Amino acid sequence: MISKYYLWTVGCQMNKADSDKLAAGFDRMGLKATDRMERADIVVLNTCSVRQHAEDRAYSKLGRVRELKAEKPALKVALMGCMVGLKTDDLEKRFPHVDVFARPQQFDGILGLIESPHEDLGGEFWPSTYAIPEGPAAYVPVVHGCNKFCTYCIVPYRRGREKSRPLDEIVREVAYLTVHGVREVTLLGQTVEAYGHDLPDQPDLGDLMRALSALEKLHRIRFLTSYPKDMTHRILEAVAELPKVMECFSLPIQAGSDSVLDSMRRGYSRAEYTAKVTEVRGLMPDAGITTDIIVGYPGETDEDFEATCHLLEELRFDKVHVAAYSPRPGTIAFRKMEDDVPANVKADRLHRVEELEERISQEINLGYVGSSQQILIEGVRKEQPFGRTRTGKLVHLDAPARVGSLVDVRIAHAGPFSLRGAVEDSLALV
Ligand code: SAM
Ligand code: SF4
Image (cartoon, rainbow, N blue to C red):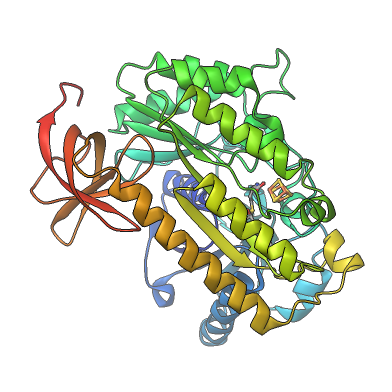
């Protein structure tokens, strides 16, 4: 009899959302969650494959599960997420103690492990099964998969092609979330502006945000991750016009050199990307913009890397997520390019981007000191409430504030990674 489940998750917000959905399904079937693997009847590892480091974490977890299953042969084990491709022969050979390998969102095989009869939960996206939110801010996947096939990236092979959820289904889910205390949603997609192109009447992300804006108890809407070529002027105008949509963009560039961008098959040049940032800032001068950078991509020269540093100086992002190139078997880069930038050079470049970015973020954040910012109180850590500005900056508060409330905060201190301030006014909207 399976009554307790242990669910372990690494990776992006999409993985977190998938796990929440699976947990909601388990809960609906009467199972109870446990945070101790030893106490579980079923263990699910929801994995990430974007970089080797993330896979290594899953391997170490799989080692522990192997020991546990030797002690308790009835234990059911599922490996889910981006480590699972179309073919699972290799994984089956390496991990015979795993009962089911499930690709992202392919929950049926996992549910099949549970002997008690279960109802049909509605297919791939379980339209009628929603996760109970953990706080006032929730993630909502709106478009799954990716069609872009950047040379270094495993995601399209593991998450499949872009597939949008029907607009009314998303509105229903968000309405449910607001009844359970959610006041801010982050709309998720690997390329979130691709939303809707595959639906019958082709709504775009702006149409979706407009429909969600009509939900009275929802106060703020975010979206990520943006792909420059999919980000149309129409969508940007909707972001600028709709008061509930936050001026907050996650817009990965990956490299500042045209030859590297070209080799990555990103589909835009440095100048086109820069024009997109200019367009965003033209419509929303205070917008917060973060980006992603890969250093040490095959063939990246010192000049290419300097071009990336110059770009960071020129565009001044609020935050940069930087990663060293990690060859991913199955990708175009893995098959066709040599991983020829030595590890120590990758580490130096990574460090330089981090240093550069810390300085720029600190300078930008100092500009917030003295200003008044709208914050949604998301939670309390070490007795300090925290939340984010409309531009995505993390803010810690000096005095108690109610979780879920929308407050105006006067910023008093700024560090490179967060701000600190005191509540001036609680807005009427709670
Ligand atoms: N869709 C988004 C985009 O277009 O940039 C990002 C999704 S990807 C899962 C998240 C980030 O992981 C990427 O922005 C990239 O910087 C990083 N990444 C992906 N593949 C990588 C690789 N092979 N090595 C290092 N970093 C990688
Ligand atoms: Fe990966 Fe490129 Fe798709 Fe982003 S757009 S998920 S980097 S293939």
